[in-house]
Image (tube, rainbow over all chains, first blue to last red; front, side, top):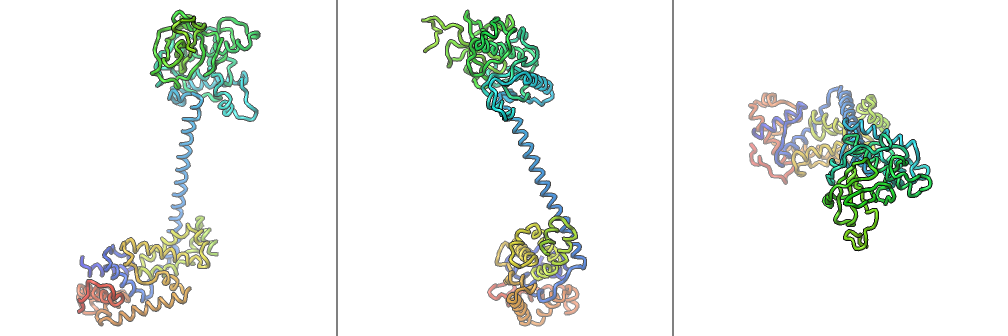
Length: 345
Length: 191
């Protein structure tokens, strides 16, 4: 199109009050259009239709309302996103510190596990109604903070651990978990009586894959070992019976020695005592060497457990898997002088 | 009163918005029309100015006595400037007229600005008067009277194509008179 025709179209658009055609051009062209406008300024302005103010108000009302709605919708979207993100974070990390289901990487609200989770929660509530935490916190603290601060290193709750999945689900050593019946005489159900405050108050821990053998076995171990501790401290109150069945159940202390807990491991012609319960997640798998199979005393007869050792640990000590934990065993008697297994000083 | 109207309009009060528009649209429209010389663009820019200005009530409070109309003109001026810059990507294409002065002059708030606007008007009239009669006539018919090419051609006894060429050359000549420092393509094409 020639510049004459373009300019004519532009002037026609101005005269008719239409949107002028796209008039991109060089500086010279723009100056020409500005000259047109300057001349037209000599004439009185062409006023809009009489209903222009009303049309303007309607259009403004619609557009301003749309912008406000858009802003509200944007805020709503941001709020929803932040709320969802916060909820996910709380669910993911809120109970991680308690060594619960996050170790397993399983979701307790997933329908297949929900029933087990509910069962575990019921067990914890039952325990909570039976007695306070041994290391009772100051009044005024809420349950969660209490559990977090006072009971982090306190004895583990059997029912808490009863919700743990099998050891094979872990990334950590895929050590076999001893199979067998429940502990004889151990309280039925998860976390049988007298075990309180060792873990978090909530019961949303990981569900056990089969809600049976391994977890109950763990519970048996723990209750028996805790009972042994109590005996050691209060020998006059609790008579030595030599078995877990008649004792007041209590968990084995995590990370603390548990002497006299009544559980023994027979391996290699030697008797070992449970010393410590360790989180499997804290122990790298590659550092374990399978030594053979031992037999745990104080558990159902015929309970056989794989026995491991750690090259970087005390040579005389051995380890056995127990659900999501490792039990550290030490010889019941110090090895004789000159023995190759004697613990170095 | 204006502030109250603006506040109510911002809160979605349709009646307040209508009242505000009725009270302020005309000076704003005239100002914009003066700048763009096109009714469609002036209407469009009027609406866009309100849309940009209303949500910024805090800026209105910062105005010292200029009032809501003054504030609207300031926003409108920026809108027009943005539009021209988008078109040309070159500040040299902006009109030589001082937009700020024109904005105030249009509502007669600043006598100095009004005087400047009158000077500008006089400059253009003088430049028009200095053109050849055919040039002056075609510009008058097409730009000031708003005639179509056909009407102009009929009135001048020329073909429509001849009128288009004539008006182009006339405007190039006028631009040369108004801005003598700017060379033009149509220079020397005078009939």
